[in-house]
Image (cartoon, rainbow, N blue to C red; front, side, top):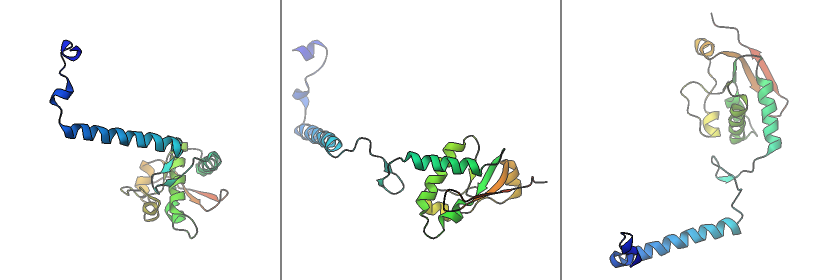
Amino acid sequence: MLCERFGMTALWKRSNPSDAILLCAATLGVAYLCVAAFAMGLPGTVIDWTTARRALPDAATHHTIDDVARRAMPPAGNVIVNLPELARTKDVEPEAVLRFYARATYTLWPRRMYPAAPGAVVITGNDLAATSPPSDPRWLADHDVHAAVRIGPGPTSVQRTPIPPAK
């Protein structure tokens, strides 16, 4: 046989009936995923990992976030920002504030925007709402923080207050 000529043993000689069943089940599973992907329009769908809902990237929203984040920054250094307070504001969705923070972090790199105290773990918008910005003067100096920023609901409400250097 051809298989034996190349040093291989024919699989059917030593296979178990359960192997054939598992192979059929795996094949059907892959076929279902292919049909679902094309019939349901899944390619190109972005799912927000924090809410498990469909979240389409919105270029206009990203441009607004980029603009607000850049306006919040002083000419040099980093900032602390009141995003936890904003996430706790009535009629503001905490996940939207988290989305702002994630996009602003990307936009501002290598500079930083610090919304949470050192050691805080922020995964969801509610995690962000449960914390507060860092306030230790030594920590702020060590992290080159030059201003405290207050961002309100709306693209035009950005207030920056300089933080004097620590002595």
